[in-house]
Length: 267
Image (cartoon, rainbow, N blue to C red; front, side, top):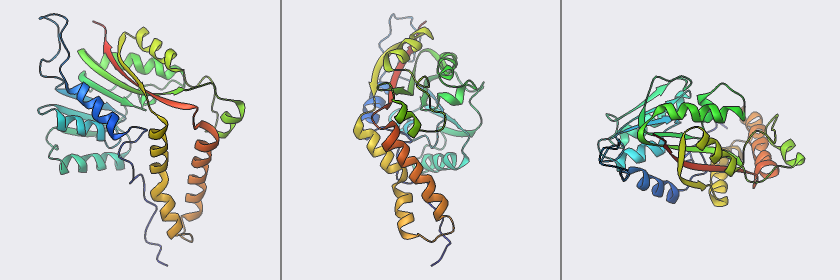
């Protein structure tokens, strides 16, 4: 058997998180609609957001879809994974968006990019702060407050506990998992308000979205392992995917949630 093929990576994922097509489309419709101004002199574009900043963008699928739906808007995606950034650039090229978006390899801590009318941070609050969980969430919200324009919007995708994890569940999760690592939904919203935001929309990923995400996260590798059981990389790959599957099914399934908060900065 030839050993030329290596394990694939995330080829079945559309979004790098538990986000359905339907939810993404609804969010984009809301975000691309110009907000109703509080007064004739209130800031904010009458044509909707014209600039997007995607923190920890990966391949930036949500940002690219937003740009498709919002002619004239431009975007910048920041991430440290060059493979994901290259996928984002290829996606932009294929959609005719290459002149309107840049994918930049850099840390988001202290970024000089922004402020932007729409700031996206999907599961990437850790990229905005060197603090350890849960303190990094507060620090990330303070950073996001600085990165959004007056009258703009922040969409934060942040992990929450759907219920307090048991000791057995914590022991099955990632190393050093802690019951204080995440807030519950109410606590996260309170933290956003304390950081100078008003929550315009509060929603959470559903069970179907989590199952679709977790299955797609590894399905290409599982099929590769079935076809290449004796590949030189098979043993390490099996160990890795088996550990992740066990963390999900025995640890955080039904315990770890993801909140999507659409936040408006207080003037």
